[in-house]
Amino acid sequence: MPKQLFLLVISTILCHFAWNQTASSSPYSTAGIGEEGGLQIAQFGAMGGISSIGFDSTLINTYNPSTYSLLSPGQPLFSVGVSTKLSTYSNSIGSFNGRTTGISDISMAIPFGKRFGIGLGLKPFTRKGYNLSQRSYVYDDSTTYSYKGYGSTSLLFVGVSYAIIRNDRSILSVGVNLGYLFGAVTNERSSIFDANKPSGGVDQTSFRMKSLYYSFGASYQRTLGYEKNNQLYLSAVYTPQLQINTHLDYGLYYADDVTDENTYYDTIMSITNNKGKIAFPSKQTFGAGYSFGPKSSKVGDGMKYQLGLFAEVDLMQWKSYSENFTSHESSTFSNTFVSKLGIQFIPSTDFTKKAKGIKYFSKIKYRIGGQYGLLPNTINDRQLKTASVTAGFGFPFLTHKTNSSLNISFQYGSNGTGNAADLKERFYSISLGIIIAPSSYEKWFKKYKLD
Image 1 (cartoon, one colour):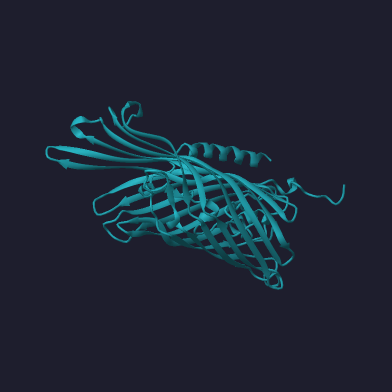
Image 2 (cartoon, helix red, strand yellow):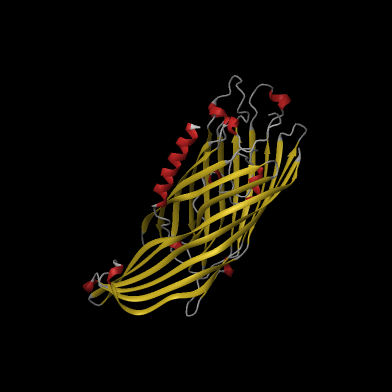
């Protein structure tokens, strides 16, 4: 399968490039251990970020582990994605730009028989990245205060799913993801008297984290109509609250050069390996969808389209977040919800048909969507709101009847409180995802009836 190998090489190069880019460039990542979640995954980001519904057997959905058993039998899938987000931050004082580039996911899923499936992968969990400065004037001198944050946490996981019910009309599947969470983030604050620059004081706090992770999922699909041309989808995902084992390191230094850690020679205060726990909030996701197409008796040899409508809501109990260490003040957040809507349209679902008029563009998956909700951060006691619109495409590779595809998504939106004096973010992002699958004649774990 030379084409699949070529895609694998290209995706590996893209991952190497993205892995060395900025994890985040958002002032909203200052509190806690950073912004939750990774960047948009192309195949789901185009539909408003809907990620719990197993609406397509040619896509890997690692967020809901129950979907692994819903993949096409004998068709393992490998997925890799990268994403770039460009932001403009502004308030009544001024504006500045930021960029975030990184890996959105690396994953693989393998269905076994008709009822089992496994998945594994690596993806971002939280990310922190900002670099801000402020100048204060006192008499004939001035002081520059700088605030910098960096680092991220990642999730390495494996999951398994089982279809409790599987017949011609219904599929009920459950699954669990088990993983290992690891990483480190740092907040750094420095102050410089301009007359003495670059020397000054530095205040540095770092969290080094590791923890077990687990989440549970369920999916239900029901085929409707005499000709089985309609589908109903229901899904739910629950991630319990995590107690993350953490070491806190704190230092207060005087430095000859605040930008060079090698010059932090005068230690005013130092605390290392302060053991504690970070309580990370639980999350619940509920999704529903409905897809339909024309009856075969009405289309004949023409194109048989499919239109899918999907909705989802995410809930997180951020008020339960806490950093439990001696002599340390915890960050505080507000509970959140994010509602999502998505639409997918496929002009022709029969990839094997060569009827007149059915061209490649009729087999592309066209996706649009949007989301609206509340973020955990507050500014001047006002909670941040998020709103965005999305669009994208899924381009299938039709050679040798493979399930491989190239997915692209675009997102444009804003985050803010609605008050002109508060910091507001306008952003747009571009995500690219590649799914690699063997050709139909290379099906794995295929049980032959004749030898």
